[in-house]
Image 1 (cartoon, rainbow over the protein chains, first blue to last red):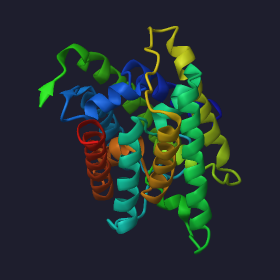
Image 2: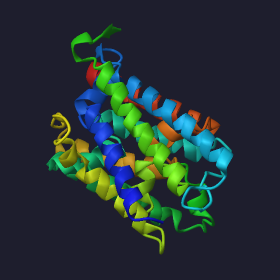
Image 3: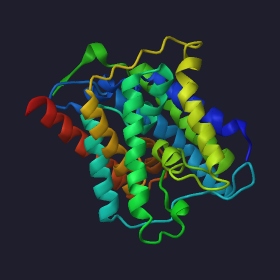
Image 4: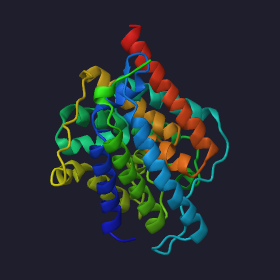
Length: 148
Length: 142
């Protein structure tokens, strides 16, 4: 795997978040606040991103291999279970409390924002807590199971 | 529902979304990987041999992106109003929840929906609903 492309992918992702102002929790909360003055911008961010990614995933599926020659690491799980729904409920609650999801929170460190840094530390602690609990029962092929 | 027209920015939102989509396109086509911010970080906790380098590089790119963006346009400084206790509780929920549910707004919301994955449709509908409900309760009920 090349060194440059993952770095540039992260960079492009973050520049997109900055351009769309998704780095501001207040902008995200204005989308999530259906009962107040609603700002639909986040829907346009998702729409634009999904449209481009949709084409790319179809091309990737047709090719079957990545350009670097490796296999496609696509999720293998198919069932909609309590873990998926429960995890998404917890995530959505935390997202609604603060207005930050993982991508924007990590990008905000680049703005030297102390609140974002505290949030990311807590987020990493939550992930470590999950890893600690998940390590108890054996979890084979955990990597292949990741959705994203 | 009333639309906040003065703050609604469809042009920059769509353009930013297209850049995010291009980043996801690049990663799946070049490396065969799905772009998910929670997965990038979560895959480092704990790090796995041979797998941590690309994650760390992608996260580094994400972190320096506001500095590079300043050469291209005037990125708005982030506005985060939550207090320390809320940041900690919210961060724990987002970190634990995204690992339990295997994805976040980018992994499920962008890539999963683009792949037409039923799991990602369920996850995205769930975290969106939880986000709407939480903001409604915090802003209009408490």
